[in-house]
Image (cartoon, rainbow, N blue to C red; front, side, top):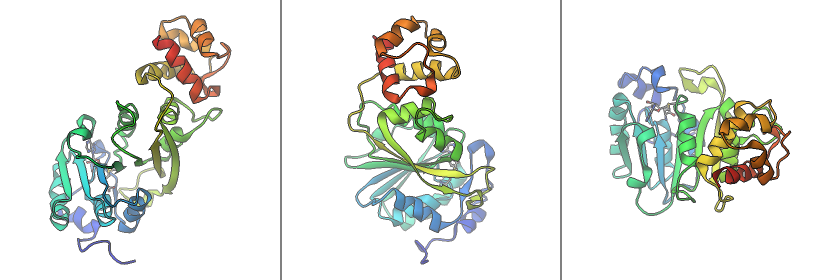
Length: 279
Ligand code: SAM
């Protein structure tokens, strides 16, 4: 396969900028530009699109996004060594890469994006991956500023995101994701694709915002699912007691049997519960 750009191979970038991976920053770097191109293509076509990337690291995915035609990439990174390495990428694609130094959890994309379509594509640091996803799923107003999220997670987290009722992995994250998006696993990535190789398989997940999810307060939905799945083996009449509201009344208002358990309730049921709770 032809190289995606005239920049040095990623292993050389990692060596040159002494990017010894730090566990505290969730650093598992991709080293194969064919794979980063595959991820970028999964998020495509990118012509005319502004992409927000969290944690560009040595820039493998960043380069693929730019080579695939993204109008602009805004990359948020908190490791200064990586920010230095990205200078070469920025010079290679003049005016198309903006590197923001800082914590992605504090970053507000709306402040830096101009008009037009925007998308999030990232190989997320595993230690804040769920927090970042919850932030994107609870954006207000809705529909959000992005038209899709294409994100790499540990396989176990990816399974929780896409799970449906009746599954052991169905939980708070599945309800939140299912409420506001259509989520699916696109493909798996084996540990050997990373430096250093993580212990587990990773998966690339695509989440497309639903234009009109059932109206519901995101924080009420989070409270209700937290209570219900916090004691997932118990009947809801018991587990919902931690909400401090009358569980039987809430369940009655939502049309759910008091003897049902969290993992049997579809997303619409949790939305009805959250609406009853927020009343
Ligand atoms: N995108 C690169 C790749 O695929 O090779 C690196 C991915 S690595 C899994 C996660 C990246 O997120 C690292 O570069 C790390 O420094 C960065 N990171 C970790 N915590 C961060 C935070 N709170 N805000 C922004 N970037 C962060």
